[in-house]
Structure formats: C-alpha cells, structure tokens
Image 1 (cartoon, rainbow, N blue to C red):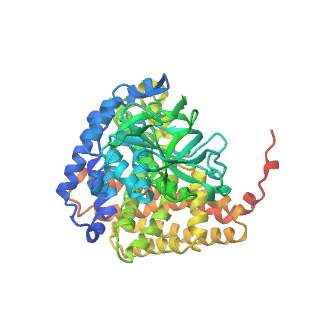
Image 2: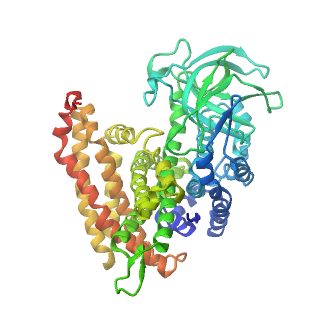
Image 3: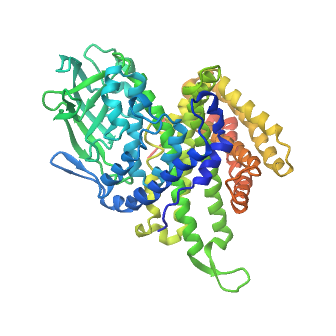
Length: 595
C-alpha cells in the first residue's frame, strides 16, 4: 500500500499555465505571488500527507457508530479535523469580515484536492461545511451571517445539507418536511418549528465540532405546491445562548447511520427533526425561495464532487504506479531477468490511460475553478461571461470527471491483478469510495439533462457555441510542429461537436422529453473534447515552465499525445450516437423491457 504524495507541481502547472490564474489579477487587491501560492500548497501537502492520509485505511475499516443518539467517528478523525481547523484551511477563501482569509476559491480547490485524495471520507465534512458557508453568505440575513459564519469559517462548527427524504430524492418538489412559524426566541429572532425526516445526510452528526449547522429544506403550511413552495432554514444541533455559544440541545436526532459500499468513515445519517416539540429553525432568505439558496450550495458541491473524482483517481493512480514498479512478473524483453510489470505493454497502456485522463481532468477542474472566481470577483463585462461559462462547465465537471473516476479506480485494481481484489491491498477501497460520485449531488443523468436542458437549450446554444469557437481559435493559432497532429485530431472532433450541438438543440425544440435521451452522450463527448483542448494547451506551455524538470515535461508530452490518440476518439463514438441514434432512443418505452 503506497503513501499518498501531494502532486504540487502538477497542481501549480494546472493553475498557472492551463487555468491561467493571472486572469484574476485585475480583480484582486493583493496579487497571488508564486511564493505565496507555493507556501500555501506546500503546507497543504504536508497536512494531507502526514495527518489526513494515514487515517484513510483505518477509517474505512472502523467506520462510524451510533451510541445513545450520538454518532462517533473513526479514531483519529477528530484530531485530524482539529489540525485542519487550526490551520485555517476551511476559511481560506472565506470573507475576511467573518474571519476568512479572502483568497480566491481556486486556491482552496488546490488545497482540497490534497485533502480529498488523502481521505475522501474525511473530506466530505469540510466539503459540506463549505457549501453551507456559501449558501449562508449569499442568502442569509446579516444577523445570521454574523452569528454563524465566524464559527463555521474557523472550523469550530460544521455544516450539512438536508434535502433528500424517503419519498423525495432528486425530485425536490415532493419534499414533505414541514415548517411552522412560532413567534420569536430570547434573542428576538423569528423562529420556526421544523418537523420531518431527512435521509442520506453526509456527516449529519459527529463529535468533531462544537456544533453542527443543518441547512434544511421544508414547507410552510400555506406554501405553494412544487419547488416554488420550499423554504430553507438553519437548524443548529445546539441552540445558541445570548453569548452566541452552543447551549440547549435542539430537537434534532440521528435515527441511524447507513451501511454503505464505500466512504465507510463518513457517517451518512437518517435525521429526524422535531420528534418532540419541533426543531427550532431560522429562515434563510425569503419565504418559498429556498430552492435558490440551496442551488447555491448544490452548485458549489457539484464542482466539489468533480474535484473528488479527480482526487480519488489520483490516489488510485499513485498506488497502481507504485505497485507496477515494484511487482515482478514475467521476464524482461531481452530475457536478462524478471521484469517489473510496468515494463509490459498492456500495463503501460493502463497506466497511461489513467494518467492522461487525470491530467485532462485536473486541467478542467482548475480552469473551471478560475472561471468561477471570475464570476464572483469581476466587476466588468467579464463577470457575466464567467457566470455563463461557470454554469456551462459545472454539470460537465461533475458528470464527466466522476465517470472517469470509475474507469481509473477500476484500472488501478486491474494493474494489481488478483491482489487488487484483496481488501488488504487497499486499492479496492478507492473504487468503492469512487462509486458514490456519479450518484450524489444530482446523478450524472441529471447533470447531463441540466447541460442539454437548462444550459444548452436555455440560451439556444449561445454559450456552448462561444466555448467551441474559443477552442477552435486557440487551436488554430498554434503553429509548433510537434502539436499539429493533436491539433488536427481535436479540430476534427470539434467539427463533430458543432454538428452534435445543432442536433441536440433541434431535438430539444422538437420534443424536450425525448431530446434528453441524447443528454448523457452529449455531456461525455464535450468532456472528452475539452480534455483534448486542455491537454494541447498544457503541451504548448511546457517549454516555458520552470517548475518541472525534463523528465516531468517528457511525461506530460506522452500524456497529451496518448490522450489525443486513445481517449479523444471516445468523443467520436458519442457524437455518432447523437447523430445516428436519436430514433432508437425515441422508440424506447417501458414495454421495451421484458423479464
């Protein structure tokens, strides 16, 4: 079982040369110098490698448990979370007026990659807290911000997201949890009584922080039906006294912790609100406007889940690479002795299939993260451009990247051979942990429908066509001879992307319900195309890069070439299914399936 190594140089390269971090400079009071960035990431790497990674395997084996209505996390997690909080990591991109450090969120993304690779179960607690902080920051009253954000940004309190119910999964319109106005409390704040049950609540209870701030979707008695009648409430585990400190226990209980395929050390809770007098909650934003606030949190989480896909793929790749270099099997080509399996062509193929996709995934993660920062920081026409581009990127980041994580973690097991199927090797955990990623925060089918419905159809393809035009213009400007084959292959795929975009637009206009049958193929094809574009951008940036040595540059060159030869053609298969397969999708019905 290999130790985790934080890939700092690859992250810096992706941030600076591919995502072009300097695009943020005009909108920042203080420039993010290279020395500062390297110092932050260097310390983040130490935290991930030395504190969080060592409890990954033990946490997977131990899991969490419920005793007397309280959830207890695996050994070492509380101490690791304390180190994480005391280091100021959760407040890295938070607002300074509430105790945050005010750095762009893309820097926090770079830190979080290490935390998630080191221990995916552990990382889910701060991920949900960051989403809660985002929702409160954008939608809550100043009173609620002042009360909750400083403690949350300090890591003293954590946050959760409570959407799903037994009868309301992805269909939020079916939410039945109720909220009832109940006057004011001792602090003269308007309060509501929350009653209902929520399921699949990540880190819904634990002992790592002094309080847990639940964000809960619920309906008021006179609320309209559907999503237009949902409100959002802060429901703390412990109510606050006049000094703003946790005191009386709120009427919030853990019913049970789910037994899951993976992420065993992350307690996934069934939560009950209001079994007695009703859990006290505080309205976030306007009545019946909770879905808007929750989508702020969900969009934050969706890019975060894409990052998880990259992170777990990187961890699996590192373990497979270490094993492939160490494991002797068969003879060397010249018959001079036993060979490490990495010398065998099929193992080389698997390893580069993993690496080339990880490089493309990382590039995409950071270009989307910088775009997201621009959507919030820019004060000129760039703001609206970046808002639209971030919206377009988000479902692809979540969907395409987490699908790649399935293949990569599976290949890591395959590289190990029979030993990969043995739990003691540790590589199977990565595949088990990764399997949740295409499911939660909106299944990848939902991400694909969001892309083709809200994003593509929503503006009649304007932003997608703008992206494709930018890719085409950038590729056509590249003149280096060693890039031309990759450029030509990507431009050919881009031509198919233009046709597929028009096909999907026409299908959505003709029959949006049937048109969504093309959605998954469209999401995947665009993901592969973006990956090729960014691999070429990386390849064109290598010569001027000062961070990497010759061997690292050589590895990136192989990665880009392999991607364009072996991974990009997958986009062509998806484009073909869009162009040729619409009729057979439209013919599908329940009667198509017989048992």
